[in-house]
Length: 327
Ligand code: UFG
Image (cartoon, rainbow, N blue to C red; front, side):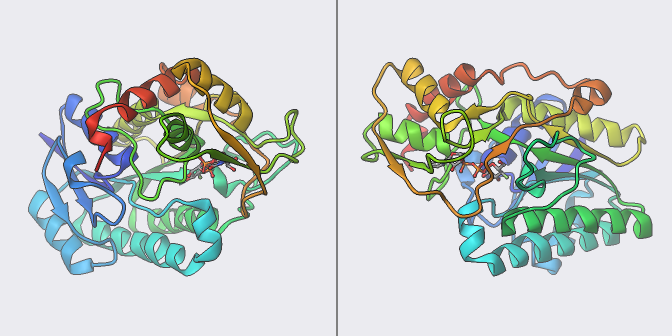
């Protein structure tokens, strides 16, 4: 069986990717330091605990499994935190990725699928966010991801490391079987926080800013289902296995929803009130991030099957109600 090294395989998106990779006949080897991931999310292949900045550990894992490719999910990904502690982001995300790329090249592994983000685009009013759009991140998280994109291009030129870069919009929802799901500690993402408030696990959902230049004053995001997102990763892996050129793809639906719309949909799905507090803006938040590209559909043949907002909240709510959530 073909082995793929999955960094961050114990995390939210990485664990869903491992499930789909295993279903597609690959052996996903999870490499994760468990700083934000969970060992019980590693269910679909071997687990190797380790830190991306630990070159000797990476060399050992590459030598043991000889993966044909890397799916690189491991990263710190909180916009707010990245504004307060940028050094953590440059160290973990950028220095960690550099170590990973060097280890991959040394081991002769020449394919990598990378989790980037629409946060690399920054706040660009009235600009269509497609893959050719300029990248002007307004937070350290986005800046760290843009730096890794640059690093990948240099490593391809010098060492032939072919890669697919996916710029995610807002990932949401969970495995419909609820084998794996979304659990961050602390949680910072909108949908799980709304569901926490609905379930009485927190007093209320604070809306970060109600005076944005949007129809209802709250930020707009393009939500994409995690299962659709990981399907795209498998297509990206096959793209590289077929010898195609390195490529960047946005992963979003092209439809944006405001924070208030997410709250209203959550109310409809759960049939419960969402207690809400209107708070100030959160540093680093863009007004609107909506994908303006269909490149993934056209070139990879990607079809987003579950990325309807109601479906994403239903799947998240199902997971939220399982015992798995109570760590
Ligand atoms: N929000 C609130 N209250 C909260 C949490 C979030 O109002 O308690 C708002 C945010 O201000 C934002 C929206 O809900 O407008 C979504 O916030 P998230 O924290 O769920 O997601 P972000 O847009 O900040 O960031 C996420 C990922 C990043 C990725 C980014 C791309 O965490 O990795 O999407 O938009 F880069």
